[in-house]
Image (tube, rainbow, N blue to C red; front, side, top):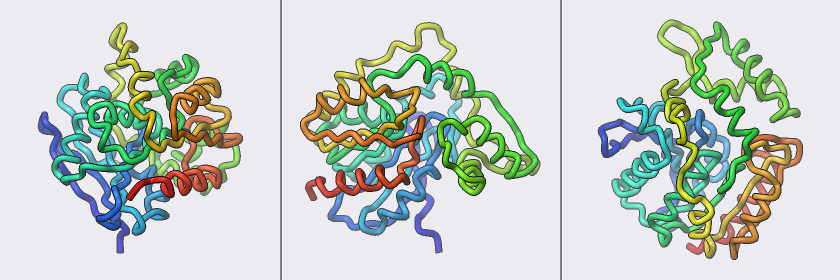
Length: 286
Protein backbone atom coordinates (compact mmCIF):
# COMPACT_ATOMS: atom_id res chain seq x y z
CA UNK A 1 0.00 0.00 0.00
CA UNK A 2 1.34 3.41 -0.96
CA UNK A 3 2.18 5.75 1.93
CA UNK A 4 0.66 8.68 0.01
CA UNK A 5 -2.19 9.61 -2.30
CA UNK A 6 -1.62 11.30 -5.66
CA UNK A 7 -3.82 14.36 -5.83
CA UNK A 8 -4.30 17.25 -8.22
CA UNK A 9 -5.42 20.85 -8.39
CA UNK A 10 -5.72 23.54 -11.05
CA UNK A 11 -3.70 26.72 -11.37
CA UNK A 12 -5.37 30.04 -12.10
CA UNK A 13 -4.18 29.80 -15.72
CA UNK A 14 -5.46 26.28 -16.28
CA UNK A 15 -2.47 24.02 -15.58
CA UNK A 16 -3.29 20.73 -13.87
CA UNK A 17 -0.87 20.37 -10.96
CA UNK A 18 0.09 17.38 -8.83
CA UNK A 19 1.02 16.72 -5.23
CA UNK A 20 1.65 13.75 -3.00
CA UNK A 21 -0.43 13.75 0.16
CA UNK A 22 1.09 11.77 3.03
CA UNK A 23 -1.49 11.40 5.85
CA UNK A 24 -1.19 13.06 9.22
CA UNK A 25 -3.27 14.55 12.04
CA UNK A 26 -5.64 17.42 11.35
CA UNK A 27 -4.70 19.20 14.59
CA UNK A 28 -1.16 19.95 13.37
CA UNK A 29 -0.28 22.27 10.49
CA UNK A 30 0.71 20.24 7.42
CA UNK A 31 4.27 20.33 6.12
CA UNK A 32 4.36 21.79 2.61
CA UNK A 33 7.41 20.61 0.63
CA UNK A 34 8.64 22.68 -2.31
CA UNK A 35 11.43 21.24 -4.51
CA UNK A 36 14.29 22.82 -6.43
CA UNK A 37 14.37 24.15 -9.98
CA UNK A 38 14.66 20.86 -11.90
CA UNK A 39 13.41 18.61 -9.12
CA UNK A 40 10.03 17.24 -8.06
CA UNK A 41 8.00 15.79 -5.20
CA UNK A 42 10.01 12.55 -5.22
CA UNK A 43 12.91 14.41 -3.59
CA UNK A 44 10.90 14.54 -0.38
CA UNK A 45 9.78 10.92 -0.25
CA UNK A 46 12.26 9.73 2.38
CA UNK A 47 11.54 12.75 4.58
CA UNK A 48 7.77 12.37 4.16
CA UNK A 49 7.84 8.67 5.02
CA UNK A 50 9.80 9.47 8.17
CA UNK A 51 7.51 12.25 9.36
CA UNK A 52 4.12 10.78 8.36
CA UNK A 53 1.77 9.94 10.02
CA UNK A 54 2.91 12.15 12.92
CA UNK A 55 2.68 15.04 10.43
CA UNK A 56 0.70 15.44 7.23
CA UNK A 57 3.18 16.06 4.41
CA UNK A 58 2.18 17.66 1.11
CA UNK A 59 4.95 17.30 -1.49
CA UNK A 60 4.35 19.42 -4.56
CA UNK A 61 5.37 19.05 -8.20
CA UNK A 62 5.77 22.63 -9.42
CA UNK A 63 4.31 23.36 -12.85
CA UNK A 64 6.40 21.74 -15.58
CA UNK A 65 7.83 19.07 -13.28
CA UNK A 66 6.99 15.49 -12.39
CA UNK A 67 3.30 14.72 -12.76
CA UNK A 68 2.25 18.37 -13.01
CA UNK A 69 1.24 19.74 -16.38
CA UNK A 70 3.48 21.84 -18.57
CA UNK A 71 2.62 25.53 -18.95
CA UNK A 72 1.58 26.90 -22.34
CA UNK A 73 3.52 30.07 -21.59
CA UNK A 74 7.13 29.27 -20.61
CA UNK A 75 7.49 32.75 -19.12
CA UNK A 76 5.17 31.56 -16.34
CA UNK A 77 8.04 29.43 -15.04
CA UNK A 78 8.92 32.11 -12.49
CA UNK A 79 8.60 32.34 -8.69
CA UNK A 80 5.48 34.56 -8.77
CA UNK A 81 3.58 31.89 -10.73
CA UNK A 82 4.71 29.18 -8.33
CA UNK A 83 3.53 31.27 -5.38
CA UNK A 84 0.12 31.72 -7.00
CA UNK A 85 -0.08 27.99 -7.73
CA UNK A 86 0.63 27.10 -4.10
CA UNK A 87 -1.84 29.71 -2.85
CA UNK A 88 -4.50 28.12 -5.08
CA UNK A 89 -3.78 24.71 -3.52
CA UNK A 90 -3.87 26.05 0.02
CA UNK A 91 -7.18 27.73 -0.72
CA UNK A 92 -8.66 24.57 -2.20
CA UNK A 93 -7.54 22.49 0.80
CA UNK A 94 -8.69 25.10 3.30
CA UNK A 95 -5.22 25.17 4.87
CA UNK A 96 -4.75 28.43 6.77
CA UNK A 97 -1.58 27.45 8.64
CA UNK A 98 1.35 25.34 7.49
CA UNK A 99 5.05 24.55 7.86
CA UNK A 100 7.06 25.15 4.67
CA UNK A 101 10.14 23.19 3.62
CA UNK A 102 11.83 24.70 0.57
CA UNK A 103 14.93 23.49 -1.26
CA UNK A 104 16.73 25.99 -3.51
CA UNK A 105 14.01 27.50 -5.75
CA UNK A 106 11.47 26.04 -3.33
CA UNK A 107 13.05 28.13 -0.58
CA UNK A 108 12.65 31.31 -2.63
CA UNK A 109 8.99 30.43 -3.17
CA UNK A 110 8.67 29.78 0.58
CA UNK A 111 10.01 33.24 1.47
CA UNK A 112 7.69 34.90 -1.05
CA UNK A 113 4.71 32.90 0.25
CA UNK A 114 5.45 34.12 3.76
CA UNK A 115 5.39 37.67 2.48
CA UNK A 116 1.83 37.28 1.20
CA UNK A 117 0.42 35.68 4.36
CA UNK A 118 2.87 35.81 7.25
CA UNK A 119 0.32 34.66 9.82
CA UNK A 120 -0.14 31.36 7.94
CA UNK A 121 3.48 30.23 8.32
CA UNK A 122 4.07 28.17 11.47
CA UNK A 123 7.67 27.23 10.67
CA UNK A 124 10.16 27.20 7.82
CA UNK A 125 13.08 25.15 6.53
CA UNK A 126 15.27 26.84 3.91
CA UNK A 127 17.49 24.23 2.29
CA UNK A 128 20.68 25.67 0.79
CA UNK A 129 19.17 28.93 -0.41
CA UNK A 130 19.05 32.50 0.79
CA UNK A 131 18.43 36.07 -0.29
CA UNK A 132 21.80 36.18 -2.06
CA UNK A 133 22.84 33.45 -4.51
CA UNK A 134 26.50 32.94 -5.31
CA UNK A 135 27.44 33.78 -8.90
CA UNK A 136 29.32 30.48 -9.27
CA UNK A 137 26.25 28.42 -8.47
CA UNK A 138 23.96 30.53 -10.65
CA UNK A 139 26.34 30.09 -13.57
CA UNK A 140 26.48 26.34 -13.04
CA UNK A 141 22.68 26.10 -12.95
CA UNK A 142 22.36 28.14 -16.15
CA UNK A 143 24.81 25.73 -17.74
CA UNK A 144 22.68 22.63 -17.31
CA UNK A 145 19.02 23.62 -16.98
CA UNK A 146 17.00 22.94 -20.10
CA UNK A 147 19.59 20.68 -21.73
CA UNK A 148 17.98 17.36 -22.52
CA UNK A 149 19.72 13.99 -22.30
CA UNK A 150 18.35 10.48 -22.76
CA UNK A 151 19.71 7.17 -21.56
CA UNK A 152 18.98 3.55 -22.46
CA UNK A 153 19.04 2.20 -18.89
CA UNK A 154 18.79 3.41 -15.32
CA UNK A 155 22.42 2.44 -14.78
CA UNK A 156 23.49 4.75 -17.60
CA UNK A 157 21.42 7.57 -16.08
CA UNK A 158 22.87 6.92 -12.63
CA UNK A 159 26.41 7.09 -13.98
CA UNK A 160 25.63 10.40 -15.68
CA UNK A 161 24.20 11.82 -12.47
CA UNK A 162 27.27 10.63 -10.58
CA UNK A 163 29.63 12.28 -13.05
CA UNK A 164 27.77 15.58 -12.77
CA UNK A 165 27.32 15.53 -9.01
CA UNK A 166 30.23 13.56 -7.58
CA UNK A 167 31.66 16.64 -5.89
CA UNK A 168 28.27 17.49 -4.37
CA UNK A 169 27.77 14.07 -2.75
CA UNK A 170 31.23 12.50 -2.42
CA UNK A 171 29.99 9.75 -0.09
CA UNK A 172 27.26 8.48 -2.43
CA UNK A 173 27.30 4.82 -3.48
CA UNK A 174 25.98 3.38 -6.74
CA UNK A 175 22.73 2.61 -4.92
CA UNK A 176 22.45 6.28 -3.94
CA UNK A 177 23.09 7.43 -7.51
CA UNK A 178 20.44 5.02 -8.84
CA UNK A 179 17.94 6.38 -6.32
CA UNK A 180 18.81 9.94 -7.30
CA UNK A 181 18.46 9.13 -11.00
CA UNK A 182 14.96 7.76 -10.37
CA UNK A 183 14.04 11.04 -8.68
CA UNK A 184 15.44 13.13 -11.53
CA UNK A 185 14.41 11.07 -14.56
CA UNK A 186 11.41 9.17 -15.90
CA UNK A 187 10.84 6.47 -18.50
CA UNK A 188 9.28 7.89 -21.67
CA UNK A 189 6.95 6.17 -24.16
CA UNK A 190 9.91 5.15 -26.33
CA UNK A 191 11.55 3.30 -23.43
CA UNK A 192 14.27 5.90 -22.91
CA UNK A 193 15.26 7.50 -19.61
CA UNK A 194 14.65 11.27 -19.80
CA UNK A 195 14.73 14.24 -17.43
CA UNK A 196 11.39 14.71 -15.70
CA UNK A 197 10.75 18.38 -16.40
CA UNK A 198 9.77 20.73 -19.21
CA UNK A 199 12.96 21.92 -20.91
CA UNK A 200 11.26 25.30 -21.35
CA UNK A 201 11.71 26.11 -17.65
CA UNK A 202 15.08 27.48 -18.81
CA UNK A 203 13.54 30.19 -20.99
CA UNK A 204 13.08 32.86 -18.28
CA UNK A 205 16.82 32.57 -17.56
CA UNK A 206 17.57 33.70 -21.11
CA UNK A 207 15.72 37.02 -20.82
CA UNK A 208 18.27 39.86 -20.41
CA UNK A 209 18.07 41.44 -16.98
CA UNK A 210 15.74 38.76 -15.66
CA UNK A 211 18.12 38.20 -12.74
CA UNK A 212 16.60 41.21 -11.02
CA UNK A 213 13.79 40.02 -8.82
CA UNK A 214 12.17 40.96 -5.54
CA UNK A 215 14.29 42.01 -2.56
CA UNK A 216 14.74 38.63 -0.90
CA UNK A 217 16.25 40.11 2.27
CA UNK A 218 12.96 41.92 2.77
CA UNK A 219 11.17 38.63 2.13
CA UNK A 220 13.35 36.89 4.73
CA UNK A 221 12.61 39.65 7.25
CA UNK A 222 8.96 38.56 7.26
CA UNK A 223 10.16 35.33 8.93
CA UNK A 224 11.83 37.21 11.80
CA UNK A 225 9.49 35.79 14.45
CA UNK A 226 8.93 32.38 12.78
CA UNK A 227 10.87 29.25 13.84
CA UNK A 228 13.28 28.79 10.92
CA UNK A 229 15.93 26.21 10.12
CA UNK A 230 18.58 27.09 7.55
CA UNK A 231 20.36 24.03 6.15
CA UNK A 232 23.55 24.60 4.19
CA UNK A 233 25.87 22.23 2.37
CA UNK A 234 29.40 22.97 3.58
CA UNK A 235 30.72 23.10 0.01
CA UNK A 236 27.64 24.74 -1.53
CA UNK A 237 28.19 27.05 -4.49
CA UNK A 238 24.72 28.59 -4.04
CA UNK A 239 24.48 29.61 -0.37
CA UNK A 240 27.65 31.06 1.11
CA UNK A 241 28.59 30.60 4.76
CA UNK A 242 28.48 34.38 5.22
CA UNK A 243 24.97 34.69 3.82
CA UNK A 244 23.74 31.75 5.92
CA UNK A 245 25.13 33.36 9.08
CA UNK A 246 23.56 36.71 8.16
CA UNK A 247 20.21 34.98 7.65
CA UNK A 248 20.21 33.41 11.09
CA UNK A 249 21.35 36.69 12.67
CA UNK A 250 18.31 38.40 11.11
CA UNK A 251 15.89 35.88 12.65
CA UNK A 252 14.69 35.73 16.24
CA UNK A 253 14.18 31.96 16.09
CA UNK A 254 16.67 30.86 13.46
CA UNK A 255 19.09 27.93 13.52
CA UNK A 256 21.84 27.07 11.04
CA UNK A 257 22.81 23.47 10.36
CA UNK A 258 25.78 22.88 8.07
CA UNK A 259 26.12 19.49 6.38
CA UNK A 260 29.78 18.51 6.06
CA UNK A 261 31.19 17.44 2.68
CA UNK A 262 27.93 18.16 0.84
CA UNK A 263 27.28 20.76 -1.84
CA UNK A 264 24.04 22.06 -3.33
CA UNK A 265 21.77 20.81 -1.99
CA UNK A 266 21.58 18.53 1.06
CA UNK A 267 19.11 15.67 0.71
CA UNK A 268 17.72 16.30 4.22
CA UNK A 269 18.38 12.64 5.02
CA UNK A 270 21.77 13.45 6.54
CA UNK A 271 21.87 12.83 10.32
CA UNK A 272 22.56 16.50 11.10
CA UNK A 273 19.66 17.58 8.90
CA UNK A 274 17.33 14.99 10.43
CA UNK A 275 18.20 16.20 13.94
CA UNK A 276 17.73 19.83 12.91
CA UNK A 277 14.33 19.10 11.37
CA UNK A 278 13.20 17.34 14.53
CA UNK A 279 14.29 20.34 16.62
CA UNK A 280 12.43 22.69 14.28
CA UNK A 281 9.22 20.66 14.46
CA UNK A 282 9.44 20.47 18.24
CA UNK A 283 9.23 24.29 18.27
CA UNK A 284 6.09 24.49 16.15
CA UNK A 285 3.13 25.75 18.17
CA UNK A 286 0.25 23.32 17.67
